[in-house]
Structure formats: C-alpha cells, structure tokens
Image 1: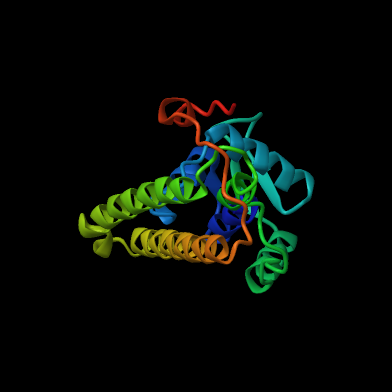
Image 2: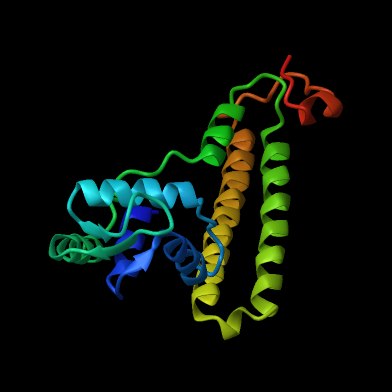
Length: 193
C-alpha cells in the first residue's frame, strides 16, 4: 500500500495536520491498517522535499499544517489511474513454505497444507464477525473486510488445489514420499532434523 499516495489523497480535500492525517487514514481504511504517526511525519517530509506538499507553521510536528501542491495533485491523479504492476507474483511466504516443504525430508506437506488451511478459516471467521458486527454501516470498513475475505478465500482455494495436486502427484509417483516424519512436538516449534 502506498502511504505516500493515501496522504496525498487526504490532503486533496484540504490542509491538514499530521495527527489529523493519521486519524483520517485509519478511519478511511476501516481501521484495518494502523499507521504510526512517525511514519506519517517521515512521509510528509519526503512529500515536502519532492514538492508534492507544502507546509505552514513553525518547526515540525503537530503545529504544522500540510497542503497538497499542483504537482502533488498530478502525482495523485497518475497514481490513481495507473494499475499496479501485477505482472510477476509477489513474494508470498505461504507459497514459499509449500514449495520448500515438498523437498524437506520428514515433512508431511499435506499436514502443512492442513495447518495453514485451518488458520485461514479461523481468520475468515474473525473477519466475518467484524462484517456482521456493523461493517455494513461503515462503507470503508465493509469494503476492506470484503477485500480481506476474498483474499483469504482465494488462498484457501489455492491450498485446496495444492492438496489435490500433491495427492495426484503422489499417486502417479512423481513426488517422492517424505522420509520418516518428525515427531509432532518438534515440528510445531519449527525444529527440523
């Protein structure tokens, strides 16, 4: 996520203080992504350096009011209309775990898949409770929750596909069965033998 551009979007509504920007950022994102006030001020300093915002007020900190410049408005417009580069997949820790686990001796990859699937289902249940708890009254929160539920659902569906492919590969003899599995106790604390 581009905090830089989110701050520019907030400033496009009019001048604001740094703390106000942090609060509005969190409110606009359904309070799903907390933002450190230090990150706000660091980003504002860079935006000012790049002449995308200008400030009024003495010194630094809460007494300074920031406003977007014409260059900042152009930058914001370009960012809003430019699709993110999705041509190569992001480095996804779960994908890496599965790909690596296939070759780690003693690892039951299907067990790894199931552990992650259970965790994702629990997360989906938590997000669903948030949605049922009033997200429909807050459009920004509702959209953020929907996005997270769709994302998690796609990961669960990918794990289902992994499970199917692994079982098919094992049945066809393409994946060498893992050596003797590690004891459950050691596997859960991340120790590999």
